[in-house]
Length: 304
Ligand code: PMP
Image 1 (cartoon, rainbow, N blue to C red):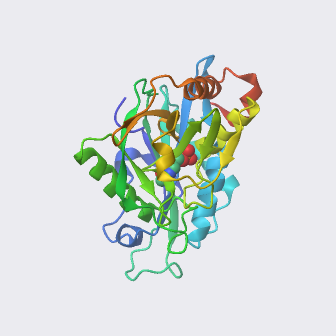
Image 2: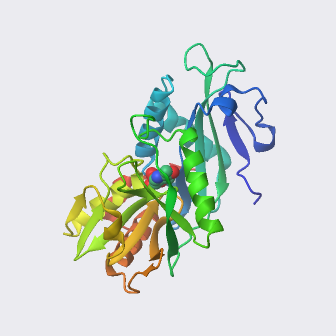
């Protein structure tokens, strides 16, 4: 399989990926007036004629709300139907990642959201599961995550990713795998493209939605799983110094699911990570369709 799945969706049509082109004058390219989604699917291990999509409606809902920040009325149901058709058109045979994007597609200049055309596109690529057994090293970034007063952080707006990119590159350039960003209040926020959890004395703690985080769908899933297993989950502001005495720290996001953190700056976390491991295994069982209790988190798309 090539680097991308064969068909993209652009201007209301399915076209071969290589023909899905946009103009150099595209408004969103210049002003960051776009919002993205990112979700995963895989062939059902129990039936190759079916594709399993994880939390499709939640992803479509978030994209629809992100579009709303751009002044673009794009109902959740429309996104969902189009993604299902896109999957049926592509008939993926390996695990894959779907990237929908809403953007100002007009060719005019001047940043604005009114009087400019908008469009919705989709493309995708194969993306295998990667379970990082050893975990990642993190530095505390010198970059802060933007604050809600200056940016609609609940939407996955493309513009916010400049800070993620700066933080990630700074982390890698200084010998770490990943960055942990604080918010403008100096509280722990999230990684460059993942939410953050820590375990202290058996309790699971994660920055609450008023901490300028992206409201991650994996984050919400992990909270529900932990609560169902009887674990106390605290959503609250998290101090930087708590990270340095945590029993376990892990990151969550669609692409990598749950990634253990093995070191933060000079603090090496304990090698035993019982809760991280438990949640990793449970999520893996769910996304591959093997847990009947969480069947409602999967959409099954027939491709035969
Ligand atoms: N924060 C940011 C900045 C992200 O880009 C992502 C990935 N979408 C996440 C958190 C995790 O969100 P989700 O679990 O919905 O993928």
